[in-house]
Image 1 (cartoon, rainbow, N blue to C red):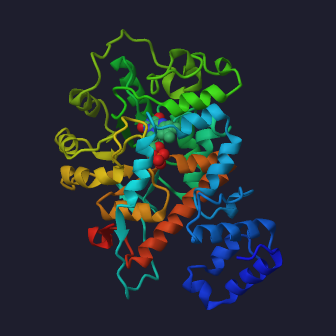
Image 2: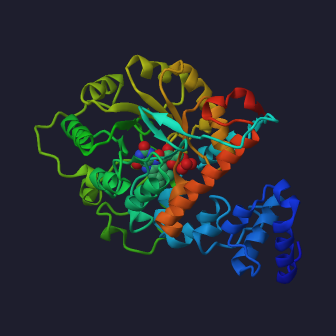
Image 3: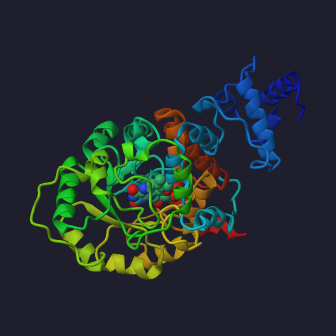
Length: 437
Ligand SMILES: Cc1cc2nc3c(=O)[nH]c(=O)nc-3n(C[C@H](O)[C@H](O)[C@H](O)COP(=O)(O)O)c2cc1C
């Protein structure tokens, strides 16, 4: 494409008016979202370059210019560079790290390329319903806002901005134990139920009080994370933290992060983790060892909330979960932050679904960045797909507006894939709509 702005402007004007636009999947609404008008702005011209480079498959070689407003984003990756610019380098390292050489992060993405789409034609797709139901509550989209700790490290409004975006777009949100906002404040900002992710405490009496508190606050479900019970080695986080010239000790009493201790919260940091403070001091009933299925039974008995396990990746554990009365699963490797398995969650998904015998809902997360990724997961038996880093890119870039834009883009991409595949509801999407690459 010519680099002369006036000829690019003419090209956009031609596209907008041409039947070719529809054939290329470019509709009026899409151009409007880019801010396209007859007096095309510089941002639009930048977006045109982006379109061209991505169409040529050179995205990653030719980096698109940074966007200046959420509405200019074409895909979720457009938020990454802006967020990186805004977020302190140590916090960026915490967000982006995997374990060891980060190989499982790459595997999560590469996993989606093992599957292709097999669209069906000549089906009326003028109306599409992408809604999903969890335990009696329906959401218009199967894209779940996964739990992710310490969100005020990425934007001053942290989880509150995310909860407001979840409210505006009506998405299911799961709050982390190590959030920088309390479950009570998050539910208030969401204006509706939020699920809670549980990291167990070394003292069962504290875990039990935490569970009771979350239930009182109005959470309908709790997701117990089981994929970090042995610890993890996060090298990228440490390398990036070393570049940060600020005084970490001012905020983190424990100082700079250490190898092998991620996932543990230093007691003195709890003032920034409101879900970990305010518990009555009871005589300690210290856990012996790390949790086993007995702990899952105890957890189930201690609450009327639905109990899910987060971090299941095998058929064997999925079957055991059903046996122990678990109400749902997250197929997850913690976004490549647990063991460096190099096994994509989309690859683990089919055996987990098989292990449950279809008896409980299964949410799959890890590397979801496109609507086509979500479609592939639903085709392989997932009830929904969870996202982590993409909505934090939106948050770090533009606060609540950025999170909303990320949700809107993924939803639009997913619904487009549904229509193009000849499916109008989640129940119609099945394994026959995908193939092996
Ligand atoms: C910075 C960061 C913090 C996270 N914190 C938590 C957490 O507190 N609890 C939890 O269960 N999972 C946590 N996760 C894992 C996410 O819930 C999710 O499994 C993962 O981010 C999905 O992969 P994605 O980031 O590639 O979308 C975290 C992930 C990241 C990147």
